[in-house]
Amino acid sequence: MKKKILCTIMSISMAASMLAGCGSESGAGDDGNDAPVSDEGSSSDEGASDEGTSADGESSADEGETSDDPYAAYEGAAISVAAIETAYGSEMWQKVVDAFTAETGIEVELTTDKNLEDVIGPSMQGGEYPDLIHLATGREAGLTEQFIKDNMIADITDVLSMTVPGETVTVSDKIADGFTSTSLTNPYGDGKTYLAPMFYSPCGLFYNAGLLEQKGWDVPSTWDEMWELGDKAKEEGIYLFTYPTTGYFDTFLYALMYAAGGPDFFDRATHYEEGIWETPEAQTCFDIIAKLASYTNPITPAQANDQDFTQNQQLVLDNKAIFMPNGTWIVGEMAEAPREEGFQWGMTALPAVKSDGDKYSYTWFEQAWIPSGAENQDAAKLFAAFLYSDKACDIFAESGAIQPVVDIADKLEGDNVMFYSIYDNGVKPAMGNFAAFDAIPGVEVRTAFLDPVNSLVSGDLTEDEWIANVISASDQMRENLK
Image 1 (cartoon, rainbow, N blue to C red):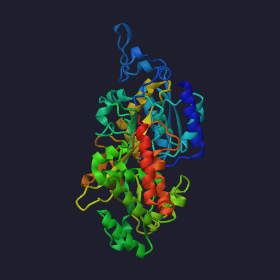
Image 2: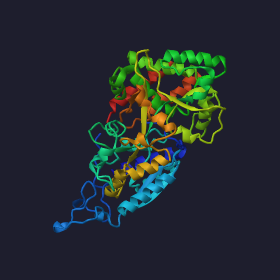
Image 3: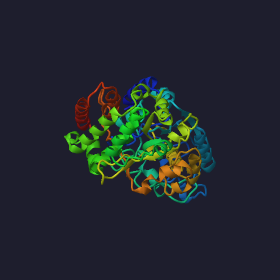
Image 4: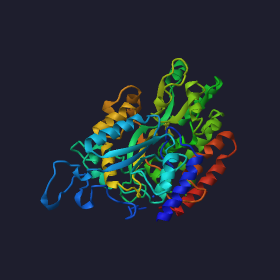
């Protein structure tokens, strides 16, 4: 096991050094099997024993004694937390850490960085793991995905029944419905939760509402209307579409799959059912993306990387493209960027496939998790529970990071009111991602399904070639399912 961990970390470290992560993590995933914590990788915190600590952090003192301090068992404990710094910034994490220490007395060593994989990779290679990591799936370095594939993430199902520090309710009482029953949090399909849902964002097509108002153009409700708008815009030298990087096509593809065939098709496709990519529903998805490629600003692929992606986003602010797939973080990420006069953010779900069809907006969220090799897992779970406290949620919300907790929308204002009310207007939420599979050299969800979009736009790949590659990759993924 130790040899396996070291080999995995070495490969992650090498990949991370070559692939700097994007400041805003796009979705979900690319973007598992039962992964019980091994004896080697699970040791309790200093001052906390398995016999003396209950699931919600309360201590059961020896010989019938009780303590008024629910965190007495953690006296002297300390944990390390590593969190990706995105458009939300890092200050919020320090505030949350300080609030947690004030509540529990547990000290926290915090590490934040925009390229977190590069920072924590070397120490993990040496066998030293952060006790909790906030790093979503879908990043180019693929660190989280690698830990999932190698069964190196601890089971945190018990966190759901823990009492939120400083409150009287449990974590499961706080988290909104659906967020702990998707493949993003339960990657192995074994009924257990391994990744905690964090900062969620309705994803869809973002655009300049001021431009459409100025031109008298309506937001398309179907793909046929989308193509009509693309033709109108082309006559005025404006492209219909762009995208930051191909990674942003994960949320786009997932919502499109729901729109084309509903939840049943999505579930079958994301589990690589034999023949699924040769169905009419799949063909609809391929056809729409291939046609959209022909309406995409041709400069997009050259800038679709982690260094230049904001230049593609700038195309929308400069009225050189109308729509781009993105999440609510885009507002903060481009807050200081120049823009055309009258610019106003707009967001819409993906158009319906048919006039009477459903429209979907993918709900993307980040994840926090505990490495199975972390030394202080009990205290780390307590910190995970605190992330859903009113104190933590308010701190995060001040920076625009919205936790998936019940009634959080009531506290929002500004553009977020529009973004997070998208599901109040008949749009359906889409959640989930591709099922995890054992590592296959050269085969990844992103490289098979998403990255080829660059080549579709440039004309270096045909739709039929792409479909053939997807079928081949999906067959291998199915044979190596966790």
